[in-house]
Length: 421
Ligand code: CA
Figure 1 (tube, helix red, strand yellow):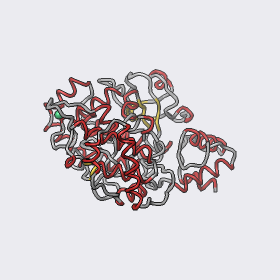
Figure 2 (cartoon, rainbow, N blue to C red):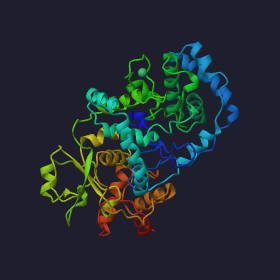
Figure 3 (cartoon, rainbow, N blue to C red):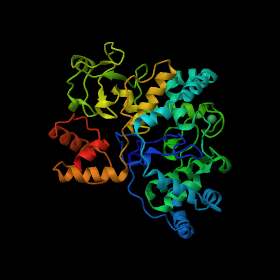
Figure 4 (tube, rainbow, N blue to C red):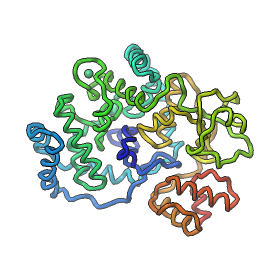
């Protein structure tokens, strides 16, 4: 879970679960999964008792006051608050949700999203000129975030933020995190940036054009149009887009540099060198035979890592410092690659050249746990059986692959699980 570390601040919104089009907030995931955009989940727990909500709310009041909220704010914002069972249902469903990266990218960087993004670049060109000049973040990247998070403002979410966060805070699964977000949401109300009627978002409290959660709003939102309010909710996207650029700038965005690029690896590439933990300068990768996907020499954008989000049989990317700036929004590799690739397409770049192993399917949460159990039994330490494909599990996968004479790309495929069975 990255949000507790202050890392994950935005939500990917693709209508993956149907309905409002806002789904699968990756900050609920337990870590990036190489097989795609999925909330790794902590396992499914029982749905909380709605009858206890009132009691919880009475206990919450004093804690909110201790955090600096006035009785006036609390009385207004919490009056008549309801438990929202639909929010909990969405929370439960997404914890089991698994989607391979190629499916994710097909939706995230669809022709429609590219076309709408180019239209948005044109329609808002003067605003984007000023945002780019102020924050040094290229317009295509800001617009790509907008496109992924809310389909360029079309799906900003219509669930009352206080109701959603109070329900999640009461429900218990990650309750402490959501209570913190609820308190931050109440601070937004108290500051007068939004009226309660307009204070809406997706089911997990992500708000506005670029789906900031309340803590990221308090930390990074800006009043770019100078009307005295940091307004990320209304139809005018100026404050929301500038806030997104401000967030990326504060996360170390390097102006004029790419997030990464698709590359090809030479025959005999040492797959132990893939993964974010290995960084080399461009000369080092060039010497190993890594080339741009179009065959040209690698441009020098500083140190980078080779990522293989679907293992040796899928596309390879060389990623640079700006990859990590986007990662501060959302640590899932699939999300960062989607933002980067959509921004490239908005700039006129072509599709990803390599094929994906589309015949594969992603492992379910239960299968990821089974994989960890079987790897552990085979003598490869996965650091526990939690269904999360963290660094220890990836290392265990590589060790098993090496011992079995397979390509050690760390890719936890269904075939690999079958081989362990
Ligand atoms: Ca404003």
